[in-house]
Length: 363
Image 1 (cartoon, rainbow, N blue to C red):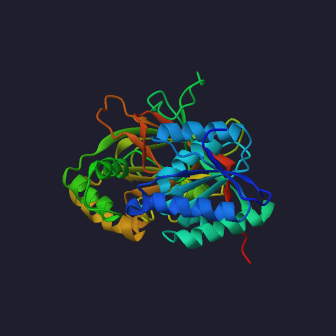
Image 2 (cartoon, rainbow, N blue to C red; image 1 turned 90 degrees about the vertical axis):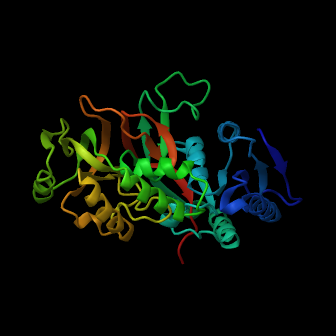
Image 3 (cartoon, rainbow, N blue to C red; image 1 turned 180 degrees about the vertical axis):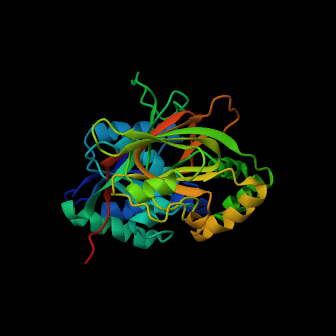
């Protein structure tokens, strides 16, 4: 198993791998990571430091350790570290533990874990480990495929189509453009950077043309009728197996977010009604609202009131294919958990219960 082992004299309760982002929490990640490892060792766990000099190396360590039989993989950082950890454990029986000390901690917040409180976060992790099976929760995860995805996080031995796993949300519209701009900015620090990036993107706003195909849509007659009032929607009829319907949306659009969790960007409630264990994506769409409309829509988005906007719809579906409409070009890249995924087209499919996370039991 790669990494540096840390052992306590007492019998180890579990074999744990820890991956730390040293820059998380405005540079506090390295110190917090050492504290987390020290506390895990002090409670009798067999701990392996799987951190690497790069994200790719850390992921390689983590994947190998999971294959070798880790009891849990623990990440110390924000949503970027969650994204890395999910690449290693999604679809396996190995649970993911999160000590959330990053700039954006949407996944941990949605799970009810402590955020930006390293001691409390480690307490919660230890409580989940001590609870055994009761401290592990199965949640949904998004499997993203597409020929334009980055191969950066693919296992070297894989010859299959690129796959990326996303814990929170897949963005491909204005939200993705904002994400890309924010990642390129050095200031301001923290979540304010996302807001500044959004304001700059709104000033440069232009609508993109999309073709979205929804599979296994869950909608009653009234909900379906409401969806079809947005220009560009076509009802393709029921699925062959009778489980939901297929819909097509071919339109200019501003917002395209396939959400598993409810928030993005450090707490922006893009999909207020999304749940991590309901078996469905909440795909949030906005048609071409124009620059003035985008300037009004963004404050609504920050407050979680954008679903009332007449150009916004939410499609609850098991999967969605996001691709450029015929003749469209220069669409934003796709992002997942705030990380660059690659170019369109992509297919995002929810895998129910395919991710196990360490969460202390309530009560």
